[in-house]
Length: 329
Ligand code: SF4
Ligand code: SF4
Image 1: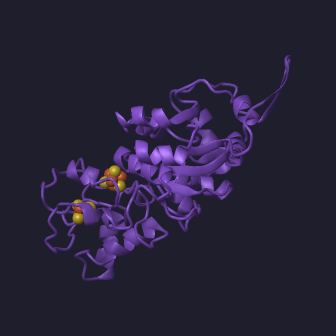
Image 2 (image 1 turned 90 degrees about the horizontal axis):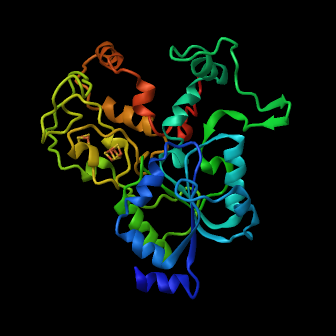
């Protein structure tokens, strides 16, 4: 690292930031998974924002000059007005802004809620939840008058947006979460000036091929007779999971993770987003399935498809905000 970073960093250290919006925190942890490389990183870079790990205030960032942060990793989607405001602020303060992880690049799991209305989400969260005690049916309001004056909380948006829906991003790093080895390679490439030209759509720390291309399992070229869920049967260890009837998103998913899940005998869930040229991961997967179903009639194909539990959650688990559906109800 040192040769490359010395060159890129010049006399001063790089200033890096990590911010979390609508996310679970896993992306923040994944950055720490670069392990011993952390020591190399802090030799050449100062952290100037990382709410998950250090006590920086909003005002600190506001006071930074524009483009003060060399590289800012932004994880999580944009679910409310505060997250949008900070995305815009960080765009202004950062030379390079990277959408980090599935939620920032494609909406991630939070964007599955895009198939619901705000009223439906609030009903589930504040009224119908069995463990909730809310007899007055209170719901969060953006503005509340109180004896202390007007209180304001962020406005809840009707949909989860990707970071690139709100601001220009320079690169995207997919994955839920991104794999540490790939992230480290991307950091090296970034400081060494070896990343491709900036573009909102450029994905780094991954490959164009599919997870199937990285998968060591044998393809026996047999058609699927029925679909099974992972808890319903024990998968054969060396045979393609999809051919065994487990819905494995490998054919429609970008590689880069090293086929982690399939090597652990679990189907790929699709967290690296669409592979190759495909824009809509779910549609690509449905197309792939169409050619390997053991169904001689349309009726039989429909019967088999009807056995797929939660098709939207299965095919668009991480990419609803990027899909052609965009959460249409
Ligand atoms: S479908 Fe899944 S198990 Fe089969 S080759 Fe692709 S990644 Fe491997
Ligand atoms: S195998 Fe699929 S779900 Fe698992 S880490 Fe890789 S891309 Fe994500």
